[in-house]
Image (cartoon, rainbow, N blue to C red; front, side):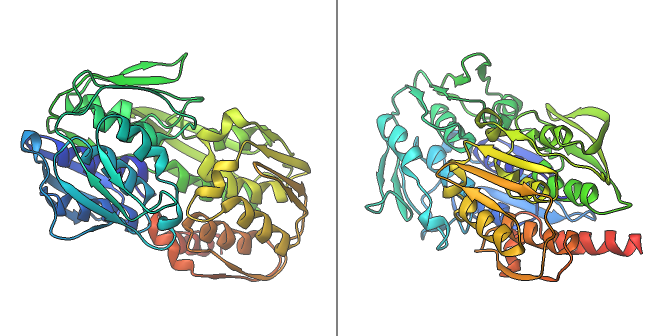
Length: 422
């Protein structure tokens, strides 16, 4: 399995911010993570990573420490990576340099004011488009003000951007969310010598700046979001069993497992361990003949937001109507995923209903042949590829190369599993 994308971004970025040389391993080699790698290189970090035998990246990163990043010679291209763009805004906010961030056509449609507005309250300046999207020019400040911020959305990217700015703010930052979001930043920053205070009852995280991160070593576990597609394949395809070792079992990331278990899926979690303050384990998934519909509530969504497309596909083959509530955030991902999932499943022959922030999928359905467009969205490319394996007709995926964002070897891994079954 590929390394976790969220942790790979953070390991590279936090190491670039640190004083000294950090050693990282298990880093996902994908288009999104390479955007972060090239960004920190442009800002003055020395990055020496090479491809390991398992396909991940490993090596040394020498950060800028107390001297800070340097202004790059040209705009930084964040590609398709919202994590790269938003986390860089937080990191750059506390340094008196001017940096322009750009992205591809998809990223340039995604909202950035959810990050630039609170960072502006701290004293940084941002020049955006009229709609608050990329390109964004960041003019940082060496004297950031402290901030206590109640975020209107549960977003690990917003939270992390503000915490990174808080590292440079006298008095630091406190972020309160309406629901728990991914907590990789809170778990990883202490390894770099930056204590983070977490209040699980009020969904808050805070740190006190200014402080200089110190180099450390990080081994990135396997990505649960990528694992969700192979787990779903095993559950849906007769006579299957798939064993996935070393997967992150961070509770803010594995909501999809809980949903699949409610649907009756035969899944085991064995060999639990802890790596880099992240829980990991082996996931064993078996074919399940009878799946039943379930309700996915709004409170669950932050822990499975990237897995809604593949869960919707599973729901199309389950008995009854599965309802997803509070999934409006899908409309501002790499594509309008909510509309795209509804349209794609409908084209495959599934009865689907959707509203502003909800989705209903009726099952069981027989998936037919179709040509579907990934809309340059890696999650859609993978879910439509999986639809071709579990349906009765051939599915062609246009712009399949979008998988390079998070799981470049996805087709090869599926093919290897199919060869093994034969």
